[in-house]
Length: 245
Length: 197
Image (cartoon, rainbow over the protein chains, first blue to last red):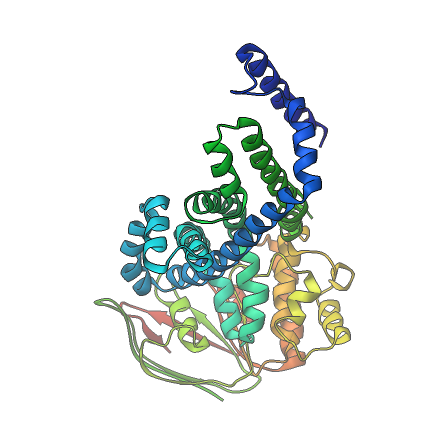
């Protein structure tokens, strides 16, 4: 933990050094210059409103992408025939730029919340599917045989045989998913929403207000670091605890 | 009564089993012998219902158990959970008793990774017998154990078979193992493999 804090303090020092060299707060303000405007944004409620809107979009897109990607990845990993049919689709979607999907969703569905969430979800599903498919392929076939011979109930097989083997892959997909999804959500908000961190960054970009762009971006990075440290890492440690036993 | 009537089993264009017929009664232990690669494990998988693509017919009971070449345990669940999840009807005490039968009662809450290979094999054996199966299938259960551990496992298996009295079919390379455990020995020979009586 101490290394983590010193590492972040080092990054802060680097920022301060570059700001000192640049010597232009319009281009890059010193870190301490953010404190007062941050407090004003926080106490006015603006910051938390926009953080909340973005967080809701991230949660929706994450839940949808993980659920659909998990199901698709499992089916493709376990059924070679389905894999042969869907693999070309996967390659197409993996290589489709995020921006294209976002623009198409806004054009086809409209500038609304549904289009925003669908665009982010569609961007992430191929990555989740690819990771989960690899996990499904790596599952121990002997355990599947064991479950069949002993006629274990399907629910038990899913919970105690399939999911524990898939856990490292699900954790990997979740961590990379969260990291990618919130960045795409910001682009979606930048292009077509009237609230959220991406919208605020767009607003302050037009005003060439670097200070507020940094306040909103860093606030959301802080939220995502908390999610990583308080939710994802403890969960990953829990599902891996048998390895260290 | 287990009836095995395999007319043919093919992998692609290669026929590996041909006209194999035998029966196993309750309490009887049949050893399947034969050289490596002849199709012993393939035949066991047909009998266990793990491979259904063959010509012929096999009748088997609902209550089956299998002891694999590798222990094939859920490494993320404790020893006792490895038994109770496979046999959900078993009480905690009954699962503990099954572990006690193989000398692992004190290791009930350890993960398989914390057990030696010999202990993992015994856990696999306990799991097999815990449900009091009508048919027990074993695929070289004593392979890669040192002589002392293999002898202990053989003695344990002998005792558990005598207590539970399932119809047992097991594959082995070792004639000594077959002579010690089996009431009848079947040998596979040739390509495609057939039974030598």
